[in-house]
Length: 399
Image (cartoon, rainbow, N blue to C red; front, side, top):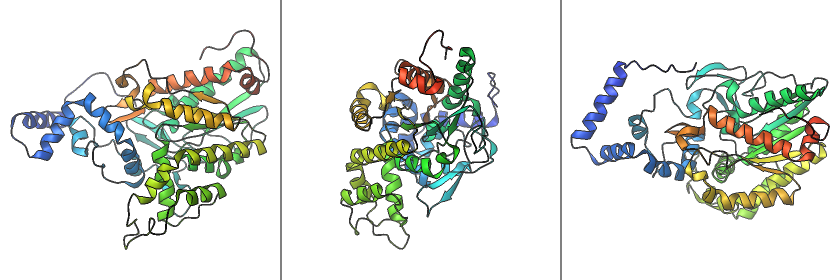
């Protein structure tokens, strides 16, 4: 349910206002004073939040406390973060599978409010519309492999860029008189690393007989990858895929690096993560290569997309080197790359982010991503022909 435009102060609002006034006029202990100063300087601390974005995902996956250098929960509350705005683990939308390569997925058949929006999953555990496993006649299916942005964290069911893409594909086919129906199947799960997205193809998406696969990459993938692979090592989970096993060997991780204590956690907390991080790009190369090979064996085209967060950490200069590396990897594996990371460049972060305490894209941000993706898919004649069975000619339905 969308919030109304009116404002009626509640006892909670008066209490928060009083707390802020008190914090501003009386001496405070050092920790509380730091929290007040952080809350007062939102733009200054946006960089701090983005620098520690990996810590956000660590908490998102593991329920950990905020890491050093990022805003504390108290700071976020002073900024207005409501108590119902919880981390992924506390949202009751995921189920742990700690002895499996994927580690966690979404519960099927959910229907509950989340951050003021309706959050549903279908019978297959996808944050998406309902689809049959068997592909209907004259249907073109796209499987989306992604993470929290792609799933639509914090936006309504119908506001995700993949649902907008599905609607536009069907509208364009109708305009052109093309006898084909389109389904974009959303296999994204929050905090899924590139390795988990890769596994989603064979473990989940392949059963739906996709005609195209879209692999989504973000500028936080290095952090997500080190979290996933180190958690597999800590929990002694089978690494499953030969290229993952080879990648771990090449990191130089030792038995001492992954030794666990009585609490079943690493004794040397960051040793494995540091070595995985140092090998990030070779591992990504192996993942994209394996994904491209699997798609070729299925006779299914693969498209790589790079999507942005709503913040300065994904700005042009910050992302330039990463996009160049990703482009080179995609080119080496004969896979087209659609760079959507500039989708938010001409907007202030407040226009496209969910809130001051969460830089996932809001509904407007998802529409910007959709517009870029739709244009990217039709700009190249080969991709247009794959989607619509003909070369582009005449009018195109306006995204």
